Amino acid sequence: MSSLSEWCYGPLDSIREVSMLIYSCPTTAKLVHTSIEASETDLTRLRGLKISVWCPHCQLGHAVLGKDVQIVQDEASLRLRSAAQ
Image (tube, rainbow, N blue to C red):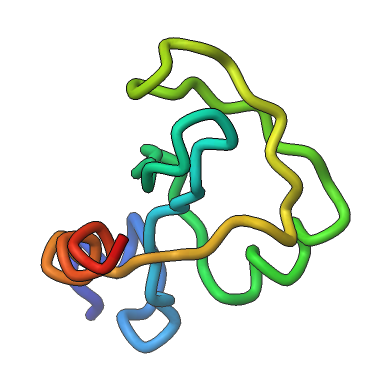
């Protein structure tokens, strides 16, 4: 018999690694961490699209090209990228 989590979400081996989208603000050049979850596969699919996002640095909405976004898996990685700017 399978567990309740497997019944609700599927087999545990089918769970994929999900990360958050990040982009660089075109106005301030600061790194922006979105709340949009995506995998490497999703990132490939987004390459040809424009993604509408809100920027907390300049308080404006941006239409960012999918090819210009990246993914980050955890807060530590995001802090390292922010510090490198």
